[in-house]
Length: 195
Image (cartoon, rainbow, N blue to C red; front, top):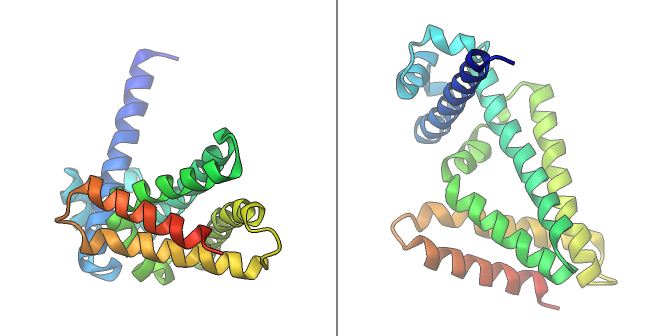
């Protein structure tokens, strides 16, 4: 592979990432329906028509944003579990992983909550499937920690914990990140380990 191709590929990937970051910010601020491709291009430092070099349309930008982040959550959660020496450490690792995700991606969380229904049916189905996979990874860990507890209850615990973690970065933007992280991790652990 030539250096030129590698450099070009890297630049293309960086522009795609810049467009997705701009999309997360603009979609969170204005809502999917109120953002044009020209808005996205301008926010990412490219012309509106240049966006088409990376995505066939605005719908594809939203799909890439939400599918990519869902895949990252699944892969990250699986990696945390794989490297943990035991299930209690896996749970603490999952909590830390998700708290870091939420603190780093509050705009994506807003877009996910508000604009998921703007996705095409197939893309929405892909996101939902990935979300279920992520939840089940947590439930599998919780089922070892809480033997005999019905799986349905463990799913409720996991989802409630996601709600706690995902909602806090919006209300705690002015608080010190380390303090918010510590508080969220301790609250989530307490919620997930209580009898």
